[in-house]
Length: 189
Image 1 (cartoon, rainbow, N blue to C red):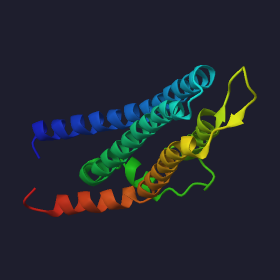
Image 2: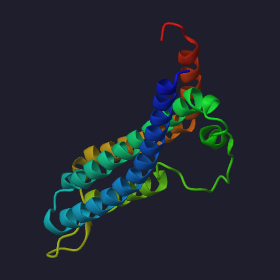
Image 3: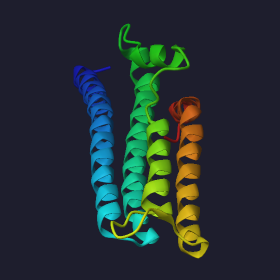
């Protein structure tokens, strides 16, 4: 390998590790901003609008935030598998990604997608933003079925998406590793 190609390999490795670090941090920032924006949206909906469908506005905030968190996670994991296949065998002992792949921590650890937080916020959104009408002129009342069923269906779709993403993320490392190994061994690439 020439000095120039080795320098490019080192520079690529550094850039990819920096990208992993930045996106991992950004995931936490996006989650924090999402929950803050959601809280403001749900409080506004509860205070201003008696219509149950306005509870979908905060749900859209939650959904968009979750999708960004999920996309950042997928990207970080994919870059990690690329580094594992294309850089670690040549990195003279660097084995961060291989170690991360083999690491089996306690099951009650932190989940990178924060599904419990998103699901809890979704349930609270359904209860407060859709099912209960908070009007100072009347006591809290549950809306009629025809008013809250469409919103409930969309909330269930949100819960299903969060659970599906968690399931997809659980097997992503192995799938991506196999694909990058296949690509590394393919002479056409």
